[in-house]
Picture (cartoon, rainbow, N blue to C red):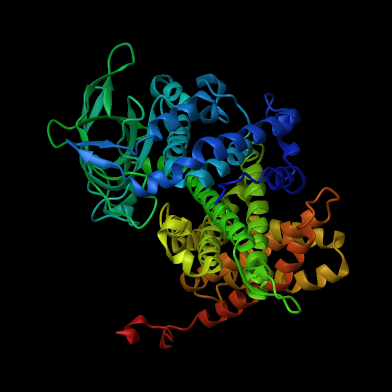
Length: 570
């Protein structure tokens, strides 16, 4: 394989002509349209030339744990230093703390390349960005001034510490405790599944940790958030004394091998020094700032890993010669075999819809400080971006293995790594079932349908600019989403069972809408029209399936026997 190629033309088209990035120019004084091409060009060089060659190293040479210290994959430290020196960690960060103050959408464009090039490596700067957001939004000025400049520059990295052995998605069960001591706290407990919990790439790691105070209320209302550095700082703000927090084991995972997933022990001795972020007993709201950032980023990971898997399948399909075309004795590339061609178009059209949605959501996120409408749209998009895109990443990476045939099942070809790496995406940062419940419970019913109804009106309005043939294919599925929305708002469906189908239905319809929007542009890539046609004919009909499935979860009276009672499966 010749290696990863950053899809610069597709990214630019989605930003300019679908997401309309120029909408945000007035709100970012440092941004100029002239920045777009240089940033995308340099992002391509860095991801293709610097990071992509490190991907297989991380998959084959896992991080190791020795003497309560993690040694990352050899070569990652140098790649991380190059990432920081290039200024990629500072793009969207606040100028007040050393950032460039540019739109997050540009950072998303850069991160697509970083994540495609080496997903395991990319998780370290990704989580650091989320920690920066949480600290900047909720911490006091002293913590911001002390920690943000070093984290934004990349000199220090950040982690997110939620999960415990007895508390996975149910954060109300957290047992880690914090005890106040003068101007700080002492943290005691254990956290598991901590991505990049320890390494040697920087001289400090800043852990954001959920814990309970001694007199905290029960449940999620009694959780506080603490900043716990690997090294406590001296009076000059430099790393000094080793804090009482250590990695005690590393997980052996299906994929993302180059990313050390740690069990972290806090306070085995005197207690880990920590500092309160935000208010006592209100830590979950602060942590959700970090989690919501991460959820859109995980959706981007789905796009990124799927893009690389597709590129590998496309290249292999044109290189591998087997069989012949009718009327010819010469061997032909398998790309020209009907079923292989179908799979390539399937991957390509889905990827285009995913990318259009990703950049549309990222521009909306940049506008969320402007008014409530953009904040509502961002909140609505987030669980769909995370859930729909990571589900489709499973499909595309699996299809790539299929295109490779038997060679795809062999580790040496590299495509198996894409499949393994992608499998975590529907699980972490809230499983896709949780995303679906969030979409229906908080973002639809909790909002009285305001954001979704506004989106549906915008989509229906756009139909007037679409050809009658395309509109005829698309309109029935928009109607499915409108009807499903009404059924949920009127409580005619069991939300916790219909939620997943509603999330997927939403994703397919939004993806189709944005494909059609792109198709109206005279600047569209050469193959966009064909991809749109394929999507409308072969992918969008899945929306009808999800809509039909939702009807099997109609609300029943208390006296009715539940049709799909899991006890029947025992």
